[in-house]
Amino acid sequence: MTNFNEAVAARAGVSLSEADAMLEHHHVRESGILPRARRLALTSLEFSGTKAGKVTGDIHFEWSLADGLWCLAGDNLKGKSTVLEMIYWCLRGENSRLQDGVRRWISQARLDGKIDDEPFGVEFRQNAGVLTGRLETGTTMPPVEFAGHSEFESVMNQFMMNRLNLEFLRGWRDDVKGEEDGKAGITDWSLFSHALISRNRNAEVLLGETFQNGSVVSLLQMFIGLPWTSTRRDAETALKTVRQHLRGERRRATQDSQARADSLQELKDKLAEAEAELARNRAAPSLEEQTTALERAAAEVARCAQQRSNAVQAHTVARARAAEVHQALLEDQKRLRDLRENAAALRYFGALNPTCCPRCVTPVSDIAHTADQCSVCGTTAPAAGPEDLTAIGQLTDSVNALRSADRQAQNAVRDTDSARVHAEHDLASARQALSDAQAALPTTSTLRRQLDVERLRGALQEREATHARATKPAQPEVEERILEAARKEADVRAQKAQKPIMERVNAEIYTLAVRLGYASLQGVSLQANGVMKLRKDDGPTFFKNVSDGEQLRLRMATLLALLRVGQRHGGRHPGLLLIDSAGAQEMIQTDLAETLHQLKTICEETAGLQIIAATANRDLARAVIPKERARIAEAGAYMW
Image (cartoon, rainbow, N blue to C red; front, side):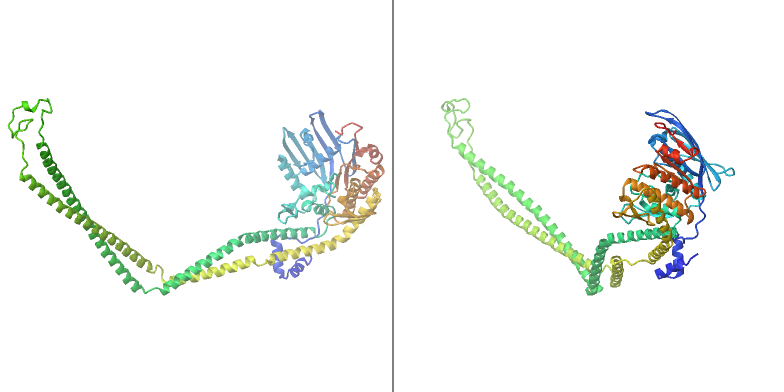
């Protein structure tokens, strides 16, 4: 072991025990000696099925394999890539690059191989879209059954990571490109398996299928075993996780800042109100004085209530008396009118002297009556007596007296009503005075008010301190400092250890690329992060900016260089490489021949290396590859 933890503690300015505890807590592994790489080699492939659609017929393919260079040659779109993708499917447990139509055609497949002379076999069947299969790992171990694509992938992931002695690498996956937030992830067989196949189809990615989430770094680690890579990625992933957590806390603090400010103001308002209440308590009269005032107010309410009751009763009596007098006045007025009307009628009709009967029109002269009899009916005519005049005079006096009494009664009603209103007003005022006296009594003691004020002052002080901390620029925590120190220390050691290895890789890439026909290339610099810088006759550039043909030469040269250097420097690559479209793009025949020769040479130089390449150039395949190591489909024919 090295003094890595001591160096981290010194960088972070903490004790060694603190650094040890923090690195152990975040599982930051110190880079040690990697275990010996194990070799993966295929011994046979078989698959069968039935084609459907425009092209129909049975499918059957068998191929026995061994170490060294092997080749598939035939026309494009005739099944070369399918053979490689079937191998990859069996090894990976999943293969999204295999065409859906071809995937549905396959009903049975089996791949046999060995890892350091330990045999294994994986086979599966598909029936109506349902996949089932098993992994055989030797004669002493029972087979592992799986059902469904996810179980197939999981079984192969565990098997390959364990048998190939591959180290899980931690990494960080951004949620959105260019943003800091993301989540920690683990690099397992699903990514490491990309080191087994080169499809030459992505114009920007030198190795594997994608540039994201440190996949190229992981593949470089698999090819050449770069020292301190796992330590650096552990520290970097842990650091990003911690910083994301801290950013979340700071975002929440920022979002709550206004709420805290409002809360502070609300607390200040409550404190001011409590202090005002305390001041009022201290300035208020004594409790004895307030009690005496309350008793006086209660007595006044009782007096005013009795006064109002008397006024209401008097008003009621006055109204009843007024109604009685007014009724008597009306009755006497009616009798007086009747007397006067009767007397007037007698005087009027008595003065009449009719000449004929008003009913039968008989002349009065023909009716014999005395002078004191009515000329019509013959009765004695009534004479107005003095008693009628006396009655009228008496009723008139009575009516006048009643009118005076009625006026007095109405005045009494008005006076009693006014007294009642005043009594009710006095009672309302007395009741308000009583309520004020009650309200003036202290609801809380002065001591309790003082305690409330002190409590609010303490809460305000604590809230102000919290708000100040939230708005204060954040300082790195001890945890963050230690992880940052670990990342920097691992990075320094990684760059120091990787420099000579990457220099050999770059020299090898340059030499091979020139031999493969890249004449304008002046220099190559492959960085440990997977970025490739180039020097050409016309100036500097990057891998992603050159032509398709130049990318193909560089990609092939890089694969060969990584395999060569990795064999000498503890690379983790298992020694199996599938190369699709080795003669694609604009590579001329001589360059393709050089590529195949280089592949053949590196296989001869490296024990246990197995390369399976696919090309559309049948003639060149026949010229370079021994017949027994090539599967060649004639023009227009399918590979299977």
